[in-house]
Length: 399
Ligand SMILES: Cc1ncc(COP(=O)(O)O)c(C=O)c1O
Image (cartoon, rainbow, N blue to C red; front, side, top):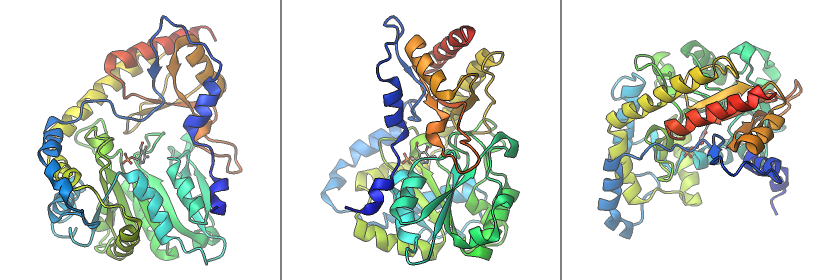
């Protein structure tokens, strides 16, 4: 067996199941899950129709590089969304479709990490999307956890990293808007990171799968490639951005996303993926082309989240008082009792499941930044989210 398998941590939902084990929630209250970040707004009809209409394409093998129409739709979306000069993103060389960002975020580490270098580090935020850590471990690198605490606007403190550690870093995962904190990396932060990447020769994998879930239509979160282009880094050297239709278009089951940026890295990644066998089914490619080409459904989707956050936050404002995130669909709330205890009691007394923050983070030497926090995904229908907020208030009144 691959010796790294034994180093993988248990997935947060396994730990959550163990925490809930033996609890008997009240039968008269229906279960509400705020624990899973699975979008539940309806998938756009035109995408489903496109998928059905193109099922006959299943009779051909897809190419790993993807169809030109899909890569063109992606390049055009990227350019519009991040104000990148038309033509700078070359659909042929700067874009690769992937089967959801999860597999691509995992696979990129396997492709770019050189195990022959001594004591390689892969940097990642802490708390973090668990795939980053598993990817680093399986690539033979050591994860270096960068704490994201309120005092630093939930962003890794780049100044706290020594030059020698930057030198050991081959890959850094960043997540903006962040899961679970909802923090957005401002352009000057991204600029600084890009400069560090050029200086110390590491790759930035920017997970931007929540980039389309934000509250102010006039102020969308910036992205790595837009900032790189703004700096004149026209070849996007060492920069990769990962995007997904899962949250943007409520299509988590479609398994569709893309990675874009540095053409040299993408060329190597294409070779890796050809052997790995991770091409996107042709009907999915056609339906994805339609999805990246439409904004109306995305604007409507944001409006639903906006309303949910307003109503839920107003119910919790005098009690749990979670901060409104800058973007994304999570609340990262401080708990008045230990997070695991809060989650267990909320489940056993109110039949509401939330995810303890410590399950999403590690103690990197300075304590676990997820301790005494819970992550709550406001993905369920509005009425269910309001019901959950009222039940959280009921629990809080007994503490
Ligand atoms: C931070 C983050 N990145 C990536 C993903 C993976 O999304 P997908 O594989 O559906 O594109 C998720 C899913 O929840 C996520 O929270």
